[in-house]
Image 1: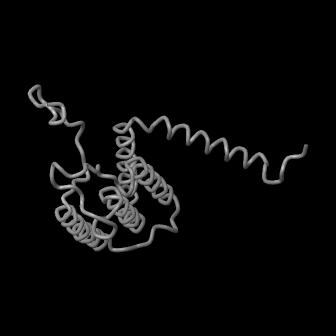
Image 2 (image 1 turned 60 degrees about the horizontal axis):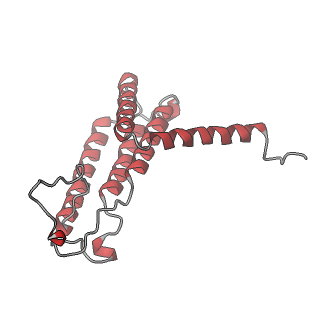
Image 3 (image 1 turned 90 degrees about the vertical axis):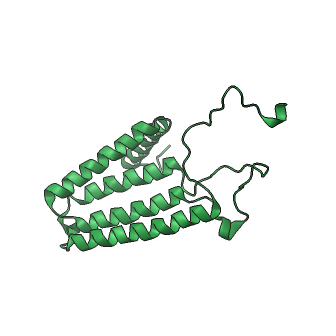
Length: 181
């Protein structure tokens, strides 16, 4: 039986590489702290490379805008109460609905690490080193960040949600659920 034209050695190599990457991603899924340390190290490496080369500020600005967009997806609820339904519960007798993110943590991490690796790869090609006055870009990014976060924090306060949880809630010996009495 003859192999299909698209089933050449290059496509088989690509499939094996994709399977290996997916295997590593699956293995890294439960290691949240390790993944974020890896992202931080990649970001430090990127910043060090840009600092050393004294260029690629447009690439850095693009990375900043892209990762700001990812952060907004990460801290935004999946269903916006203003557009898609009732507010989140505010009283103890209301139905409990956990905070569900528009962009899950793993996808946020994965998109961020890919963007930093692509940005680092772009620093090896001088075509992406567009000469700009970088303090203006930095100032504009900070203004954009603060305006966006101000709007997002107002949304959080208005709808009374917090996008972060810090571990499982602990109860003391004396606390007993009302249903068990």
